[in-house]
Every structure is written in structure tokens, then in C-alpha cells.
Length: 263
Ligand SMILES: NC(=O)c1ccc[n+]([C@@H]2O[C@H](COP(=O)([O-])OP(=O)(O)OC[C@H]3O[C@@H](n4cnc5c(N)ncnc54)[C@H](OP(=O)(O)O)[C@@H]3O)[C@@H](O)[C@H]2O)c1
Image 1: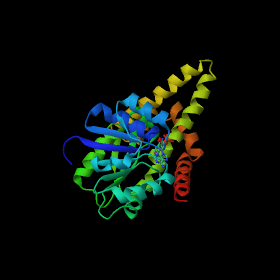
Image 2: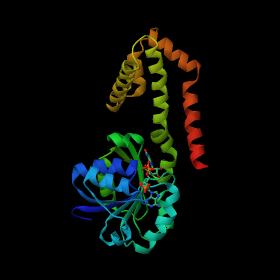
Image 3: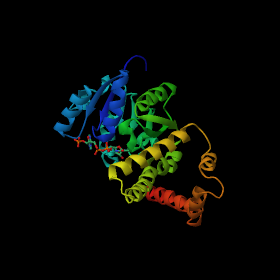
Image 4: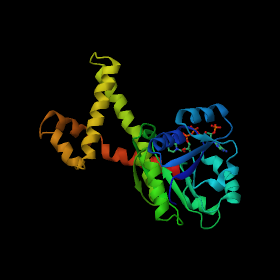
């Protein structure tokens, strides 16, 4: 895989657009998009990102290096049946929950390089924490291409298929826990008499700053210590969180997400 790569997105919804939005800035790829027949959406994607669209991707496939399946898990079997007939060595990547590389490999010709990528919703503003797991036939050059795809939507980390199953609760679901905390704190801030917009500004910047501190690589326990002087007001608040078993609550919430996704 050398030179400018040709990538076909099957699915042109939110996730495809998040990735395409990052890719077009880099000019490393020729991009095509296909979908399930929503012509208006396909034209929107063409006009917004200045990419090519196709109503019949099957005729394009010989000319393609990478296929990104950006559609619901339940649409995969049908598309994989078609891909089985037409692929000859293209890298096949899915972003769908639960569709691991082994699932793709079982439904594609032996030797087809595959990967599973699991972004989170912050991908749409280029701030995803994306996990990816290459299939058994993916080689070094394929990893390089996958990482180029992912760099446009945030940070990424290569893990195993089994680890994606375990870690999606943290990178994919836990943002909702953070938003829940934000909702509570915003309500309490607004109760002081400031506007909702002001309350949101306060809370979002507080979380953003905390995340930026964490991104320096400092130990969260150390950072906690820097905020909470022993015997001070923050320390008293932390005691309440401890009394309510915050750690256990989080463990249970993460485990519940994992269990649901296994089911
Ligand atoms: N949104 C996220 O933050 C997020 C995060 C991680 C993973 N994902 C995964 O990403 C995948 C797509 O999610 P999304 O949020 O982008 O969904 P979406 O906005 O609903 O878009 C789905 C796209 O799939 C297309 N599609 C459905 N069935 C198809 C078929 N048989 N052939 C071709 N195209 C088909 C739809 O076509 P039409 O345009 O014709 O309707 C649409 O363009 C899902 O598997 C989801 O689990 C999403």
C-alpha cells in the first residue's frame, strides 16, 4: 500500500462523517461514500466534504484499497456477503459495536486483512479516544493506514479484540457518566443564580482543565492531592464520595455496561 490510498465508506452517517471530516484535511486519501439509499444524505456528504459518492460501490471495489463499514451491526451480514464475492486483498474495517475482526474474518475470503475500530462520540469534534484491534491478516502497512484514518478523529490505541470488548465500557460508555456528573454540577451551579449558559461554561471548562491536567500524564491520585489539602473543604467532599462508595459504584456501572454488551 503506497501512494494516495483509495477508501470507500459504506455508510455515510455520523461516524462516517466524523472520520471523513478528519481525513479530508490530510489529503492522504481519495474518498468515496455509499449508503443505503438516502440520496439527500449522500449528496450532503459529497458537497460538504468534497468527496466522491457512489450508488453502486460494487463496481468501484477493484479500485479501492480500504473499505470502512460505518453502518449498524445488523447491516453487516448482507454487505459482508457481497464483499465476499468481490474483495481481493482490500483492508476491511468496521466501526460497528460488536463486530470484531474474527467476525469479519469468518465472513470474508481467507487472508483478508481486517480491523475493528471503536471511536467514541467526541470523534465528531476530532477528540475521540479510539480503540482498534487488527485482525490476524493485517500487516504493518495496514496498521499504518488504520492509524492515518484514526488520527483525524483524535487519539487512538491498538489493543486486542478481547480488550475492545472490555474497554469500550470505559472509552465508549463512560463519557455518559462524565456528562451525568456535568449535568448535576451544572444544576447546582445554576441554583446560585447564574444563567444556565454561565453554569455550563463553568462546569465544562472545569472538566476540560481537569482532563488537560490528566493528559500531562500526572497520576490522578497526585492531582487529587494537589486540590485537596488535608482537613480542607475538598477533603471533606472526598470523604462523602468515599462514604457513598464512589469506586464501587463506578466498578458496578462499568461491569453493567460490559455485561449488557456481552448479552
Ligand atoms: N455515532 C457514534 O458516536 C458511534 C461511536 C462508535 C461506533 N459507532 C458505530 O458506527 C456505526 C454507524 O453509526 P452512526 O452513528 O454513523 O449511524 P447513522 O448516523 O445512523 O448512519 C448509518 C449509516 O449506515 C447506512 N446503512 C445502513 N444500512 C446500510 C446498508 N445495508 N448498506 C449501506 N449503508 C447502510 C445508512 O444509510 P442511509 O444514509 O441510506 O440511511 C447511514 O448512512 C454503528 O455500527 C455504530 O455502532 C457509532
